[in-house]
Every structure is written in structure tokens, then in C-alpha cells.
Length: 346
Ligand code: TXA
Ligand code: MG
Image 1: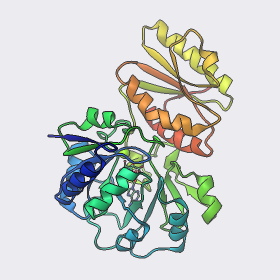
Image 2: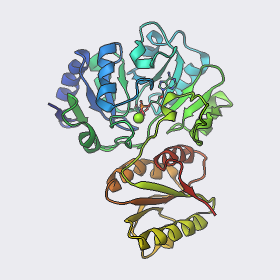
Image 3: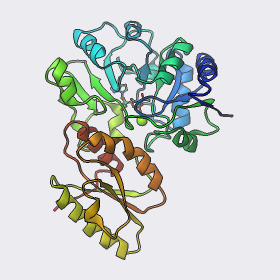
Image 4: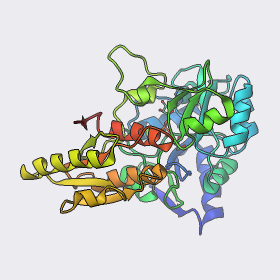
């Protein structure tokens, strides 16, 4: 049976009960500033194993440990490199996950056998209260069935995991709307997954940061992913997603409108995810505005919930590319995966 708590009106009760569920090996879905997480005691290998079973997650895809204060990383990493200190002081709590050499207390179930562990401190009162109550680091992937778009509301978590987990803490919609930036500090700093802390923000404090090839490109047959999560099909709604790729939004809209008309004449149910700026180019077609191109974070915040909203309701979702700078990089990383890299170009 799954219990649900309102993280605002039932704050104390919810956190206290959930903390003991975690300590006793159970599973709790909780809100963070990025997406909802599915948490288990990060020091208990058997509890962590349940996360993989419930999500249908491949066993070689490691999890992030969530901590409530910066000093908690001491026990989890082999040591704390200077760049990690600077990054934690600048961006924690916040949507930045740091991958570094693990200590011996971290179970293999968390890291999928890797010698490194990913750690982050979420910027959400409910998540922090839960971790404090639990008294252990919480291992948590996004609280969706593997392959589906990550959940940004408690309703999304219910749709995927109702009856399979012990508790859902409902803290309302997540602010960022897509998952944290994953940065490796093993060797040259490298972004394995872009997110709310951008390359530009990272470079302003630690200098040059590389971006893993898999961020914007499908992995080649013999290529090894720096981050195992990159090799799986991800964020896929039950609809075909197609991206109109063009640096000029008006030209991208032209490609999309043409494809829409072809598909519609074949009897396919189409919807366009537009921006505030491009909506006028789609007149007469089914279209929703998901955000403002001038502020890509608005598009990021709405992407997963929009994909879920039209999953199974449209045959084709058509949408435009954004420039791959600032939050546009995270947006394109998720969108390309949702689309299985299917694009239309001139
Ligand atoms: O915002 C977030 O990060 C959310 C919330 C719940 O905190 N969590 C999340 O977890 O997105 P998940 O499991 O869906 O994504 C974790 C990503 C995966 O791509 C995984 O491969 C990568 O982090 N990762 C975890 N540990 C790693 C490691 N030791 N080395 C390289 N990549 C790692
Ligand atoms: Mg995930």
C-alpha cells in the first residue's frame, strides 16, 4: 500500500514517518527542486536494490546519493578535492551532482560497481527534512518507471508507481523540471548530463569544463558512456517526438508546420509544442505554448510535464530546437532523447 502525505500541511508527520520508512529499508518518493526522487537508505544495499526492481531500471545504471549538509560528503568520498569544495560552496544546495572517488561505506548497489559515487544536496525543504529525519544519505533516481519522462508532480509519481512504493510526499510541482547537472571530477571536469547548473556557471568558478560526447549525440556502437544513464532510451512518452532543427526559430517553425500538415493529412493526431515567440507561425494547428525562448529555463520546467500530458493522446509531438547554450543545453539533451534523435532539417 502506498501512503501519500501533503509535504506542506502534513510536514512534520510526513517527514518523521518517511524518515523511519527509509531507515527500515522502505521506499519514499519525495520532491526536490529538479524532479521527484525515489529514495531508499543509501547505505543499505538491499533497500537500494528494491529501487531497481520497482523502476525496472537496468542494474548497471548507478544512483545519486542525496545529503542534507555539505559535510556529509566526507564519509562518502575518498577525499574532497579543492574544486569540489568550491562547487559545493557555490552551488549547494542546488541542482549540481558531483561524481568522485567513493569511500568504502558506499554499497556497490548504489554505484553499480563503479569506483566513483555521485552526490548532491537538493535545494528543497521537504527533501532536506526527509534526509535529516532518515539520518542516512538517501539514494534516489527520478521516481518514474525506467524510460518514461521524469516526474515533476506527485501525480506523475502516482501514475507510475502507485501501490509499488511505501510513501509519496507531495510537495507540488518541481521548480527546475529536469534533473540535476552531473559533473565528474575524476580527471578533467566533465559534464556527463547537463542541468540547472549550466556549463557557463561552472566555468565561471572552476575554469574549463568538458561536455561528454553523449550529451548531444547518440552513442556509437563501440563507444563507452562516461555516465551509464546516457546509453538508455529516455524520457520517451507514448507518442513520436520530432524536432524541427534550425537556428532561426521562424525557419524551424516552417519545417514543423510542413511536417504537421503531411502527418495530419494521413490522419495522425499531431500537437506542436511552441514557444511564446513561435506560436503565431502555427495558426490553425493544434498547438500549446510551453515556454519563452528568451528564457530557456521556462521551456525546461514544462518539458516533461508536457510530454506526459500528450503521451498516448497524440501520435506525433512536433517541437523546435533551442540554441545549445545555458539551459538550452539541458533542454536539447532531454528533447533529443525523448525524440530518439529524430529530427527534421532543411
Ligand atoms: O535531479 C536529479 O539528479 C534527480 C533527483 C531525484 O535528485 N535524480 C536523478 O537520478 O535524475 P537518475 O538516477 O535518474 O540519474 C542519475 C544519473 C544517471 O545518468 C547515472 O548514470 C549518473 O547520474 N550517475 C550516477 N552515478 C554515477 C557515477 N558514479 N558515474 C557516472 N555517472 C553516474
Ligand atoms: Mg532518471
